[in-house]
Length: 248
Image 1 (cartoon, rainbow, N blue to C red):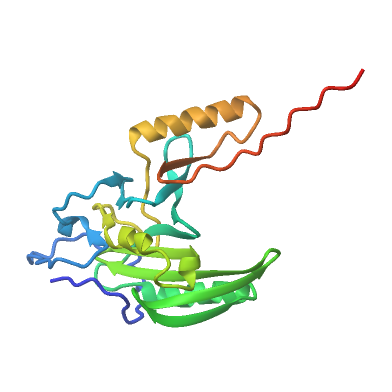
Image 2 (spheres, one colour):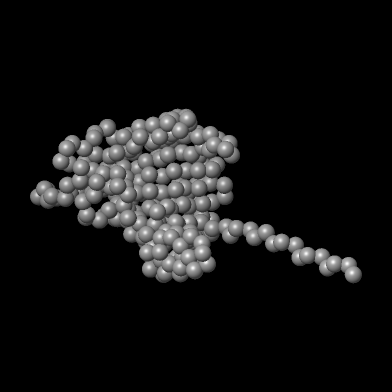
């Protein structure tokens, strides 16, 4: 029986157990319904439309925009949901079969932030133990909120940015999207913490490839493109004023 854990006791993989085991134990696994994010084996029978990105099936609620950074083959390196002045970046990783990795990941993230001169504050939030990190940059202090969800052989790392980083009630649409993610871990043995592969649906991948090829032909960056969907606000184009006619 498996219950999704918000956090777990720290346990580093022993030598020879870097890859999660796929051996059959002979015991039948009984699964309970979870609160979400959901494992593919526990996916709810609902009417939500989800974007199939391979390792995850991602809902895009009304009022939420989706952006993905991709290469010419449709392989996604970054997934971001946006609404208003808030954003949610998602990453899904492989994890051991028996233990969660969020506690260990919190220590690692804290070390990265403080190593850059930032500060980290652990807080009890909507998703259990979370980290509020503040990093000073050229444009001021940037605040993000790290959230981790341990699942069966997978781990979802969610990073809230913008207003939602400091206000739990700022963007309920983003929490709704995170709660209704479905993770399809697959059966391949992978090192713990390795990012699970995300890929655009075929039609979106074709559009991205065409955009990259055009940009390359024009002498620009021919390796990556940003693909958008949902209620993503379109950037405002500043038009240059027409030149005034010269007086003769």
